[in-house]
Length: 91
Image (cartoon, rainbow, N blue to C red; front, side, top):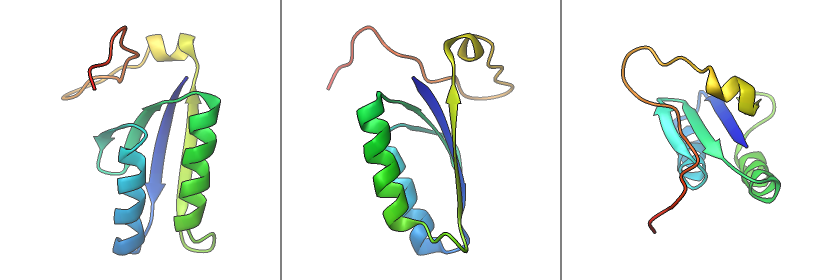
């Protein structure tokens, strides 16, 4: 499943830590927006790690689930492309 993760964190240290965590799970598509292709287990791991960083009273993280039908009609205007599930991953 494709997830779109966006965040608004005023503290630079927490923001940097969160970006590093999100890089472990997906691709940065804008400064504070990541696309992540995850199964439910990886989603739970990502959320657990996010909760360890975020301060409930100061920060905001939003995780949007992109369904297959919606994923097909994402429009990118300008640079970049939508993260896709590849048939083969080279590690």
